[in-house]
Image 1 (tube, one colour):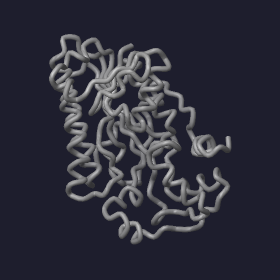
Image 2 (cartoon, one colour; image 1 turned 135 degrees about the vertical axis):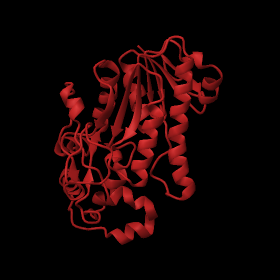
Image 3 (cartoon, helix red, strand yellow; image 1 turned 180 degrees about the vertical axis):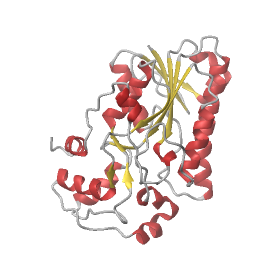
Length: 299
């Protein structure tokens, strides 16, 4: 299979590229530069500039996975917010333009999205049939991101709404676990906010599952079957790491230190992966005990 991946040098993207290569796929990474060209067998790279000039570079691809976008873990200044949004819109538009010009269009495009589209209403667990309820900045970004993805002329479009990806080599989890290593872990704010999480192995497997399964299209929640509150999540980290869960972090300290970015830690969405489960996806790490035990070496 020939698969093109944008954001293939990022945390999740690099894990996906490695997994695709291990199973024998030919992978093209779409990136700012083409430095990956000679690093691994079956791996090539196309710059965004060359893709715009020569979309035929993707002709014959069996799938495109669009994971491109600026990290949301940055100061939410006006400039930062614009970069977060515009990077996602630009990537989706570039893919839409390239696919539109291809004689042989890929059968499937998998576009990243965010679980924050559901907002912070914790009264129900949101699945893929839930309405869009969020009105905050992140929810607005995801809504516009998905609208841009909807303009990609693919016969099958999958929008993977990603939660917190748990891994030790990237993402937010290493920073979340660090206080526990220092015996200073505890709930953040009220501790009642929900954390829709997924182990990095399951994240990559779910992306590949969406590529391979022709029955899957539209939104797919990329989160484990058991969402957890911040307090429960912290207690699970403490137990897996053999550290206490006792040092609460007041909201005002976060807001002082991080500004509006503190929203990421003080609010969350409650979601379940109904579509993935109904289509037969099997989570290797369905519970926090399993996921954190593996990550922190206590399985």
